[in-house]
Length: 185
Image (cartoon, rainbow, N blue to C red; front, side):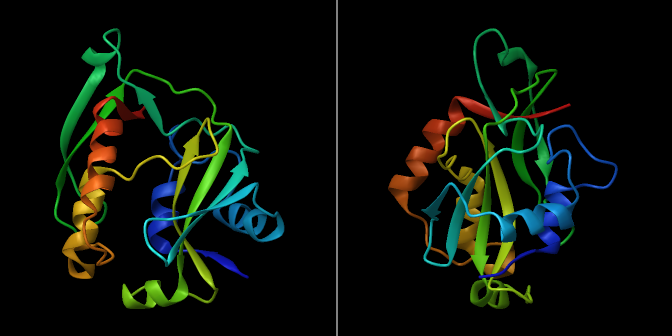
């Protein structure tokens, strides 16, 4: 099985100039090589048959993706409309400013099959393509953000995967994201 970095993931996980809330201490090529060389701690099923999550112990100083919302930090939440890339419509997102997450214990790359990436117009030269990565304290998936679930249900034309909305998974997502938020330096 071969794993390759997609352009979408490269831009988000390894932004130009670096970012404190992105993957630290390795290049995209080193990250990809590590995923190909090292067996995962665990493999989790993703939200659809074409999606797998490989759980790896964090070998970097990468910090957790999210921080719990508390009364002590709620005033540091910010929001705005953003698009993940120029082809997508902006959506409402929220994040913390002035909060630093702890170093993650696990990195969980999100992988899509070659067939799904072909369908989405992103052909790859491997069996699986990295489309994202979760940075967590536990070897478990963070629920997909509600807006990502909605975008996926809209279809490939709107930057999604074409997977219909699962109402129970959506409610679990809302419960998690109501009490947690991403952070930015």
